Amino acid sequence: MILNRFLGIPFFLLVMYAVFWLTQTVGGAFIDFFDLAGGALFVEGAKALLTHVAAPGWLVALLAGGIGAGLQTMATFIPPIFFMFFCLSLLEDSGYMARAAFVMDRFMRWLGLPGKSFVPMLVGFGCSVPAIMATRTLESRRDRFLTIFMVPFMSCGAKLPVYVVFGAAFFSAHPGRMVFWIYVSGIVLAVLTGLLMKRTLFQGEPSHFIMELPPYHLPRLKHILLHTWDRLKVFLFRAGRVIVPMVLLLGFLNSVGRDGSFGNEDSETSLLCTVGTAITPLFEPMGVEKDNWPASVALFTGLFAKEAVVGTLTSLYGQMESDDANAGAGDAGEDEEAAFSLWQGLADAFATIPANLAKVGQGLRDPLGLGALSGDEAAVAADIDSDVSVFRAMRQRFSKGAHQAFAYLLFVLLYVPCLAAMGAAFRELGRFYGTLLAVYLTVLGWSVATLYYQLALGHQTVWILTPCALLGALFGGFWLLGRRRRISMP
Image (cartoon, rainbow, N blue to C red):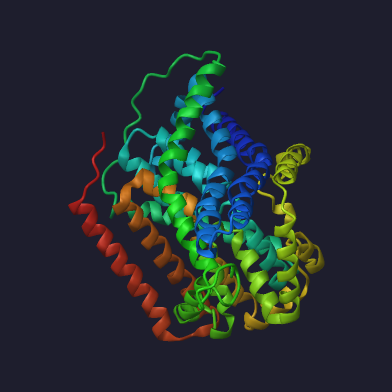
């Protein structure tokens, strides 16, 4: 049945659905624990300790807000990566993975990839980090690189909160339809990227499927756990060398104010906000106008994690709506910091495990979490700990409506993924191809968003031709690089 021409693919898709469910839903049930525990130990705990010993503000921002936040970010990826590698090791040890590659080989070869590449792309709908790490199962260096270039187009679960908020604000009648087109856009661009890259940057043929199918046998738990730990350790100790310094830099910029003070996170006075405001004109062709500078700042904080886009928008729009509310929030934050308890923070972390595991069954029906989509502004505002005034502020600054908002969402979909994903990509690709990936995603995201906005609303010829010229120059450069730096296949 597994290799049957009619039943092989449905059985493969069923197995992949189970892998995705375990990675996204079961693994996701432990993310809150690692997030809260990491925050209590490395961020709030470190901040309380440094404040107790009267450490200067810059040191608190550096150690707690920078390095501590980087370690917290790393910790949140442990559960999905562990479950993903556990599932892959289980399939490999049972003998099914080789048969799965055989089943999908004909379809994936059309994109210039072997059948095994389908697994990382599917996992990418949950999280790009384990998806990029899953490319280690590919023997050919060229195949790994091409797959990694396609993975970021699979809309990860962290982007869904952004879609939910914009769906409530601009697509309240049919939020699901908007998200459908976002996902379709990502898949189409992933396919086009594969077809173009195999003729430009990654010229050559995919590795041929020539292997002896191993016999079936019962997987050994000890072997699977050891293999899983070895792969997880690689991520923690190698990708972390890139992730932590990048989070440190952005966290430091987010904390430091224009006057040199610290503790200015997500406020108009932070250096990160100042930089975001200064580059807002770059996003004007795709519909982000000068008075909508919080949207530019949110793209920067989205580098921490894509769901941070929502937190930044609600915080900055809230400040713009009411300075009094902002002052009150600041007082509350100081009280909360004074009352910090490490043991209470760890207890809250442990309490999330049974609560989240109780919801695991819902993930069988909705592994992507699309059930969160709603046109009810009050319900969505409650989910993001805000109020409906945020949606009013969004509509005021995205004043041209749904098309303007959709162009912004296209950029969120396509531009550089979170620092953890880029850290994993740099680890697998190396500095040169990792930088090319970041440049490609950013240029493509800006070009697609600009083209959509200009064709829908702007109608400025110069901003229709400019993205086309940029993409043409980019692919021309990739073609020349592909000829000069042909990637060998071991």
